[in-house]
Image (cartoon, rainbow, N blue to C red; front, side, top):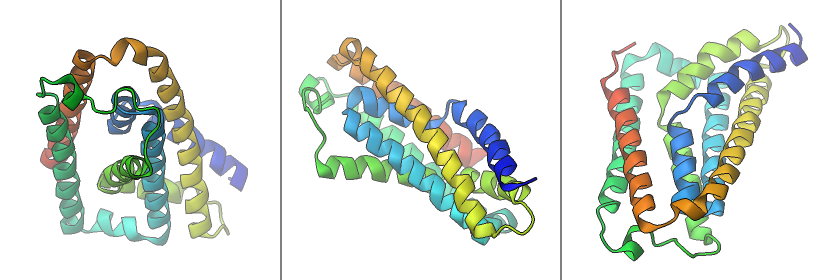
Length: 215
């Protein structure tokens, strides 16, 4: 298997994984509908940042520590689960607001501020970095796609880059698709419903992550 075949084969696997609905999809859709398009793109870039960090970590062997150390894996799992539950609970709490302006303060704001963009990026990055399944996926797949004689670090960066490009393409499609539907979904009641659905999904992912059997 040469470099081109490795990238193409990994791209197929990563592409199929990208299309499976998950926490990344939920976060970006919620950001698109309840916040601004800029905030949604910042969240998507944060998600890609997390993927790239995990890809490099897998290439240099950090993710192998997670695969070998039960304690390290469980510690990161609990931290990630707690973070997801906190995000979900925050959205559910916010959705209880009866005042439309407090339930959706971003309605009518034409562009996200620099602070809001950083907040979106940080949310996306933190969600992926605290999800050990991403690291385990990379450590399980990247070694299989490294051609003989190719530097592992370089290959890890290239493969993670392929995953990032595919992920950004899919999330961009979702963001623009949500933009077409936003004029019907940006009233206060719809936004509260979106927050409740997204919050429930995040809490579900967090609890599932925390309660899954140890590997």
